Image (cartoon, rainbow, N blue to C red; front, side, top):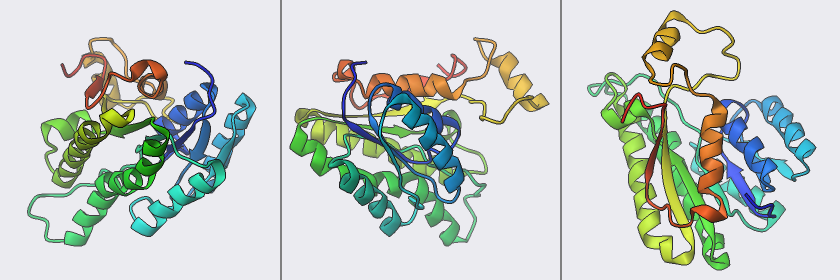
Amino acid sequence: MKKQQRTALITGSGKNIGRAVAIELAHCGFNIILNGSSDRGACESVANEIKATGSNTVVAMGDVGVREEALDIAKQGIQEFGCIDVLVNNAAIRPSFNLLNDDEADFQRIMNTNFYAAWWLSRACLPGMVKNGWGRVVNFTGMNAQQGYSGKSAVSISKHAAWGLTKSIAKEYGKEGITANIISPGTIKADDQMELSDQFKNLERQNPTGRLGEPLDIAKMVSHLVSEHAGFINGQLLQVNGGVVV
């Protein structure tokens, strides 16, 4: 990908997939807006890695599941760099939630983080993308969320809503030079997952590639989707799972 001075906001970028995406896009020449809800130290550590690539970065802490905080994160990034050209809505929560759960506050918290955050941030970033005639939005779903989570219905509902948002942005803003796509990762190792549990070893054996995914596998897909070469990939759900779901 060609070096450029565009800016990317990656939510939940202190560790794992978000961290890998931030560092990969920094290597591609993007200014990076890092975000975390509580662990500033983790984000600052990633910021140091980004600075080592020669890219510029700012840490915008805040809970994207709270509307005012999500909008403030976008505001900080726009004030620092002028525009957010790439939005990667990575932050998510996946707690258990049975369909008969009466706690609507729990349901709303899941919806706010997994769907409304992407909605709020997209609406905050799209005007600048439209003005510049170029933009990229990347959202995330997941294999289980696609198929329907047993015992985690709110997660599946929220991720399907994110899928709908992706298609809506793709249809409404494609002519403005803006694309929106959604990635469905397979089982991805965490940064600190040195030894696999028996459950993960079994998933590893079941995968056609004979391995689990790495955060970099997802980061490489994101870097392609936000590149100049991917302008005709729009409104798509892309499976990055080693072939375990086809």
